[in-house]
Image (cartoon, rainbow, N blue to C red; front, side):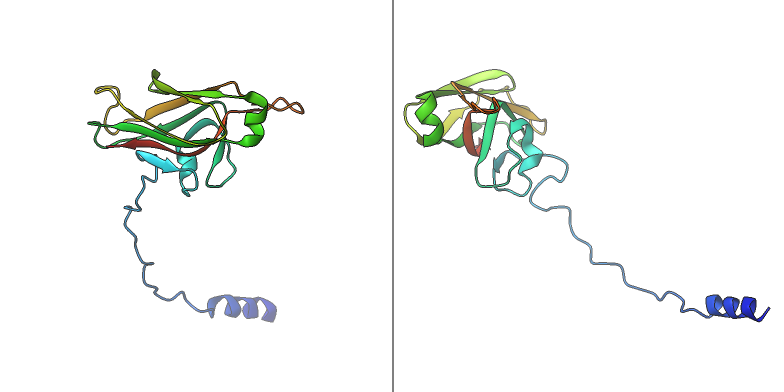
Length: 170
């Protein structure tokens, strides 16, 4: 009986939880849409993975490998006077095997253009987007295709180029 009373006293005499202030609140205006993408992304952006649909390396860095059919998604607030821009590199190590590489790019399934990379190094493309191709606040799909791609003799992995940034500017 004493044991039961001691246990009850131990439980009933504990400290009651005190009153605590609510934690500081933060605005959801974090500079990015926490549930999606903006109009432009750098590969070293902490939210860069939000833009990847497929075939972009998950390895974090200021450049990421694009594989067979890289695809990204974006959202724009204003679809007027858009220019699609991307920065990428063809590394010397893959260029020695592939030679010149042609990188074509499309927005919402419509080819915008292509760039022929006759040397290893950094490249930048800019192309105006036709009116009506992109709708405000809806996801915009961007795809790339590089030919030829470097193919690993060990495991068959295919590498297109190193992507630095991509998206839409006005």
